[in-house]
Image (cartoon, rainbow, N blue to C red):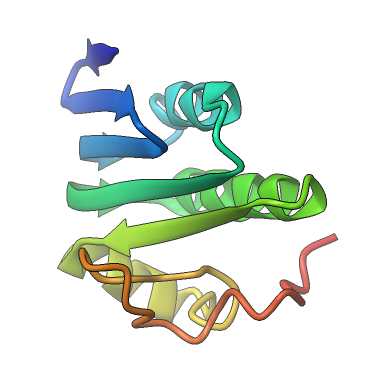
Length: 117
């Protein structure tokens, strides 16, 4: 499945949700819906081509990670440089499970205690 909304593109398949463009209040609902619809327990969200993310996008990722965890699954995020910078500035490096394209953990998150209620 592929979808485009303004400067945001989304592709879904095989336990991977790939986004490109701007992840903000206008587009985070589409990303959340795609993650929720993925039948796999373990989902990778590829944000390598996301050049902008705001607090709505961060909230979407932390909420979806918490939901996956509660259901016995996981959510791993492959961030772009812009996403990594905002995650670090927001103090969420210990919360989000950041990995590189090969799946190697790059962030400190994903420990199971996400501190989000």
